[in-house]
Image (cartoon, rainbow, N blue to C red; front, side):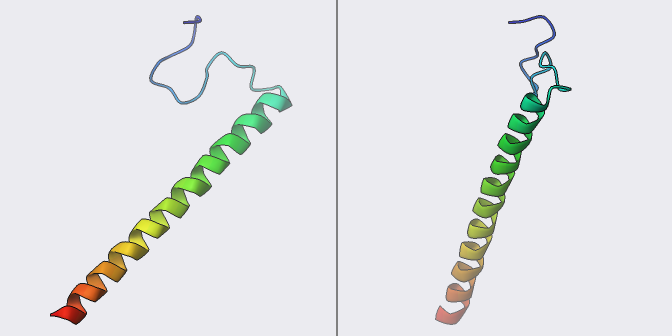
Length: 59
């Protein structure tokens, strides 16, 4: 492990963030992860709502 690098951090602490290529790469990476996570959350919530609605109709 490099000096300054931590195991528990999602951000690599030893990268020079002032360089545009690092900032753009990690900005896009975390934006894509956020979009995918949000989409999964929406799908999960909608399926849960539909399941509960079907359960209420069958009773």
